Image (tube, rainbow, N blue to C red; front, side, top):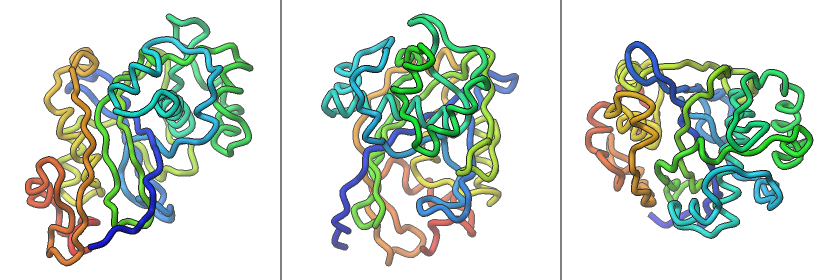
Length: 268
């Protein structure tokens, strides 16, 4: 099938994790049904890169854009924008702020910035403006590169999404106070996958793949220490393939074997 001709937009997604009695838990949100992209689907916080995310004068701690550019096989301005978008989207969508008053600290209560969060979500304020006004430093060292998934060429709305992982900062809480989420929850990767197999929610292949990978880590220290080789993954869309409309992604046969009968991609 020929491609849609739509250029994939750069996007950032953050897997926010924490340690719990049963192992690591990851923060998940079910998107509002009426959304143009992935409505009703369970995802990690994230979204498209904005032009303002490329602002050069952000106070920055941790690996420089050149380091991120190498990991994500892109140029430095794009790498900076991807990291900035990861921090911005995480704050907008669940209130977790990966920034601090100094290069080696992180805010212990992000609720004080609730008004700014609303302005960021409405695009009345840029991340650079917010950080400068509050004298905050973006903590790039709290993020790790994880993977890169690109929407199939046939789709009318496409994203070139870089996945990051970060540990929930001490003293902060993740919430569902965003117009984009209908439900949020902390679950172990296995719990999230089990409820998906039971047909309780919908996971698209990229989210399913990351949850599957996270099952192999005992705690958040191990997650952050893991060395990831990030290579672009772009599934192929074949609408006539009964039960298997997507291919060319890791463990795609297992994904469709476990996909519940009412899954969003079966019989699409």
